Image (cartoon, rainbow, N blue to C red; front, side, top):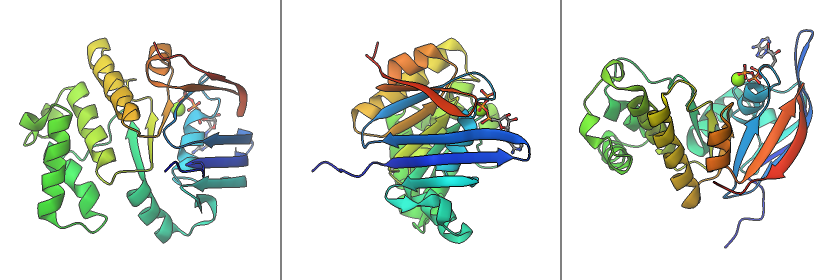
Amino acid sequence: MTDQKPVVRLDGVRKEYGETVALDGVSLEIRSGEAVAVMGPSGCGKSTLLNMIAGLDRPTGGTIEVHGERVDAMNETKLALFRRHHLGMIFQFFNLLDDLPALDNVALAAQLTGSKAGPARKRALELLDELGIADRRNIYPAALSGGERQRVAVARALMNRPALLLADEPTGALDSKAGEQVMDLLLDLNQIGQTLLIVTHDERLAHRCASRLVEMGDGRIARESALERS
Ligand SMILES: Nc1ncnc2c1ncn2[C@@H]1O[C@H](COP(=O)(O)OP(=O)(O)OP(=O)(O)O)[C@@H](O)[C@H]1O
Ligand SMILES: [Mg+2]
């Protein structure tokens, strides 16, 4: 059965930081199974847009629905739970916990939603295995390569089977080989149905992984186009 409701719906979203207008009336829908790339010059509001959708920050105007719920109107407690259950996020600099080995970084995501340690660790290991880094499970982030760290971060983001995976410059800190691996991974995930929203400066990442391109400028959507994946 196809889900008719969009996974994400933004309507007239505005965000001001003092005098700065970071988002100036953004309306956007993302349907289940889509892979959307957001591009545009530095400072045009890409990360702000992602952070609004993730409920990490609140808009000053407009509405944001994710997975059928108004994240802009949720209280902090509900938002934290909602984020853990329905969203996965990956970042340029991985945001792993330095004092936990790879497996525990991943398993923690499920434990925070109430899973017991045993099943959480089992699923974490399965994911690390699928991402080709099961042998690195006991290694701390500092001793992992950038590509390995990002794969651990992807595994963590997938732990709770999120309706939406959000990525902010996921290849931005990786060399080209590790970047390629992460691109392949994102493409594979989308091809098995994972809905993706990727913010990137990397044309190749957008064209490789995304089915739709959203170009931003000055806090607005300047252009939207369908992509033929290369
Ligand atoms: N927490 C904040 N406080 C004040 N201003 C902010 C904050 N976050 C973003 N801004 C401002 O909002 C605008 C949009 O920033 P944003 O980080 O969304 O841009 P971006 O498109 O992600 O840029 P980049 O490509 O460099 O990552 C910028 O002018 C930025 O300085
Ligand atoms: Mg940014």
